[in-house]
Image (cartoon, rainbow, N blue to C red; front, side, top):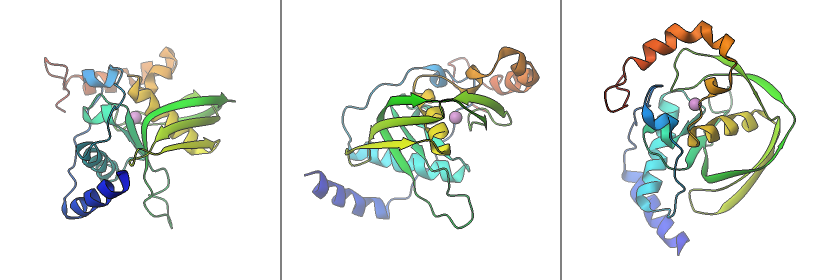
Length: 195
Ligand code: NI
């Protein structure tokens, strides 16, 4: 059943233009909310995920969480290599992801589409195992200690309302205070960042 529906959806998808979703900026309330699990993988959800993938590439991202485009649901997309020479686009979709293993420590400079202009070193687990559903609702597991492990932890945090700067020591964040204040100033009275 999934196979048949999926094929049908793919035919529809091929004539559908993906939408560029606007990325919410720090200060937007949705970025600090814990996202809800996805109960059904509907054709609408698949279209939304396609829009997320399209938007990730259009904004030069290597990962994008649903919360960053205003939907408080547990899905993120990652493609860490597409912008490197000789690499093609190979987006990974993680629906209702769950880490089952963490090991070691790795410090990497991170940035985020929701906090433009701010880059800082963040300490995360070096090796992780994650379980999730793909866009067809099939369960898969990734076991990695490569940069993908860092990207998945960053995107997963978005689903829990956590931004990478929340993991940076406060003293270090003093450097970025002005920049973040300016970014937050575009938030309207409903907590939606219109910047
Ligand atoms: Ni981010």
